[in-house]
Length: 545
Image 1 (tube, helix red, strand yellow):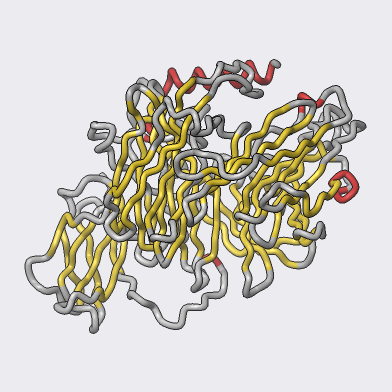
Image 2 (cartoon, rainbow, N blue to C red):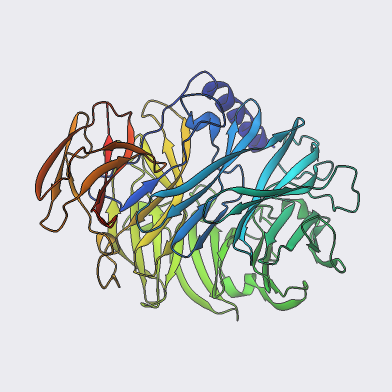
């Protein structure tokens, strides 16, 4: 109880603190590497203010991470929030994953008739429309001062916005009327009560979790009106321990795809002698058990608690927190399993004497190994890339540091592109040296060349040449160096792909100087285009004051 009360005090402190200031976005600048591109949605047009404040308009875990990679494009739907009013609106964007340019961007209002919506899912249907799905709240949940479980209230209905995949035009917005009681009432509570995923045909899998001496899972199939398709399926996980109130509540279920659901259940052990009764259950699309693994026997170690971090079509990624002793700090271990219950990899988050926050992992298919990205647990917050070798060893391949350590990257997802490049998404966090708590956050995407972080590239040829731009960052002037085959018009685009500068005459081989003093602070794209419209080169620079 003390811990819950302490968390409440801290959150209230942060709310009071950040409302009194505005913090302007600054891109991440690295000392020893430059990303191919970097993107953060910072358009403030929805909110109606000039300065888009990172802490008052974004939160670290407001909603699920909604994105889709499709045909060399990235579609994202981050939500915005103000401390005083909650969720105000959201973005829907299409970003070219090769160049990082924003093809189109729209904002949408999540406030209607004083009712709020919360983004839940993003998918592309079989008519090639981008669907953004949210829950429109009808009844507020009953406040829970201990952040444990919300059982009562919290009633919502489905809301779907459909966008043209090429232009970003809003084609349709569907939501049932509040008086349509055939539409299933949904529960929004992000971590504890609902798990939701759409498919290409416009149907949705919705799993509701209730806590009753364990878990009761209820699975529904819904159409776009929120109407139930077929029967409701149900399964129970009951603990044989009176202290089952201390069972896991954070992300215990993952809907991997239409045919695979992964669920983790265990008791948070109050001492090293208690039984965790941990189970990892694999369900099919009808909530029928395909496999169930008892992890107490499989892990065989003195763990305190478990986390189901992620699951894809091939592997399940667990994080294990261990007891070391009554006066020692707990430490973390990561376990990668296949769907037959075999442990593939097992490694600690302490490497070379450094403590890392939990690792983010992706499978490197061509190398049959895993790439791990870790955030260093000291005030530098540097990023380190590792690659697995053998069963329980990691090899360090790259460490990244920042020019300004007050802005650092908290990675939440990593994937490898077809050519070997690495795509990261997470949060750009502003944490001043003299502050006890962070002050601002912005959802951010980064793409790195495979070679720059020590991986093998499968690029045959560069699709677009990278320009040499210096100095970078710059405040008054940049120099763009063109090779012999790179003549053309030079233009500069802002982070949203809007043209902010274009040369009057064609630029030729050699050094081309451009005044940028008039530009606001931020990240910009430089592009060279020939007379036929072919892009001969792109590059990025950061404008600083």
